Length: 69
Image 1 (cartoon, rainbow, N blue to C red):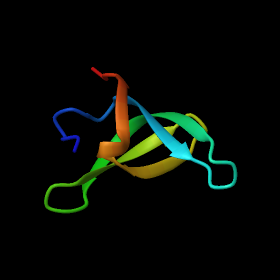
Image 2 (image 1 turned 30 degrees about the horizontal axis):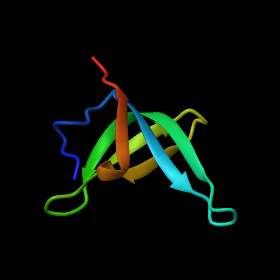
Image 3 (image 1 turned 30 degrees about the vertical axis):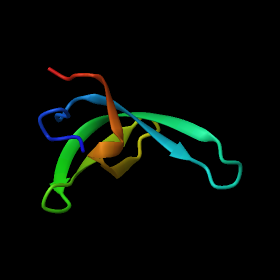
Image 4 (image 1 turned 120 degrees about the vertical axis):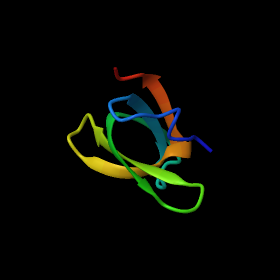
């Protein structure tokens, strides 16, 4: 599990998803804009992706590409 200490607001992150129709892996890049606790030990990040959409993603599925300052 990725903790809040590893991912911060302003970090550039990568999220990989798999399309159901062709089982292809897609990479999505975006900036973390908010967090929400989803359980006792789980956290989701609201990410603004390069296509302009925002999605809530479990922080354990995100990879930090570049840390925000």
